[in-house]
Image 1 (cartoon, helix red, strand yellow):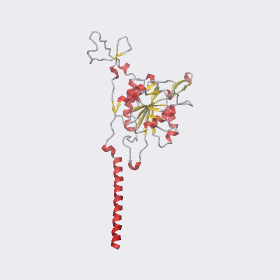
Image 2 (cartoon, helix red, strand yellow; image 1 turned 45 degrees about the horizontal axis):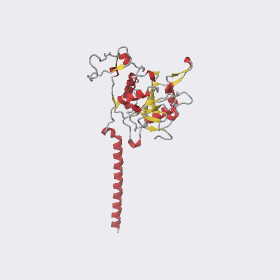
Image 3 (cartoon, helix red, strand yellow; image 1 turned 30 degrees about the horizontal axis):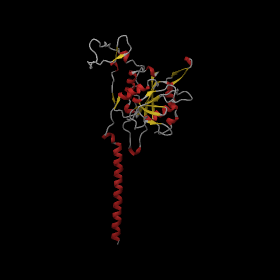
Image 4 (cartoon, one colour; image 1 turned 120 degrees about the vertical axis):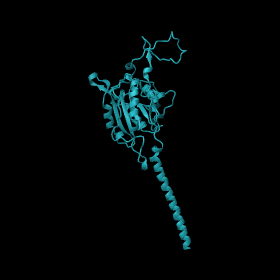
Length: 313
């Protein structure tokens, strides 16, 4: 009887040990798989497509662009083909942004493409805010009859005082870069779009997402251009702005900015988009539809990527 009891205890002990060993091996394999996944499948490299905006020429005595369709020989005969005037480089690539941001995060920057998953210890997300100007950065200028004008450094100061960002562990770390001088979006053109795209490419490995702050007049054009320029994009690039300046007591700027930061720190929106009022819109399907209402943008042929209410849909 004692021998039988001993055999049963031994069998039970061996069974329990097998279960424990299998569980330990499963946990170790899970840890190794998550922490070393980047070795087996490296992140897709961002490819920056360089568009040659200088390919547009102009007819003499006309401000209308003429595109050289020399490959289509049947379109014009030699007699009626309009003459091509080589464009001036300074005319086509003139930029309102005086200097690119370059690589913003230079020291003590952990590679944002390879988070540490060991024991669930994920690092905090990091978002780069590129500010070109626009209504969001404006305040009353006493030297100009209290007219609204962009204020350099105001955004950086405001971000530093936003406790809803600094005290909430779910919010990302924010690094802001303000271009100098801050400009109206109507002054921006293809050259400035190229600078924004290049700055995102330069900082791509240092940040988990990007927010571009600018005026609303040409936001849809700039965001659409970057949607095609940033190939193999694996991180969110969120454009936003406001209809009312951030410094006003009542404004839409604060909500737009916070929601843009939230979306920029997410992993499931790897594309260029516009957040405005209560919707996240695909950049290359968006257009400005109103100058006086807070819902200034729409995408008539595309459902919003997300809608904001009590939660995020």
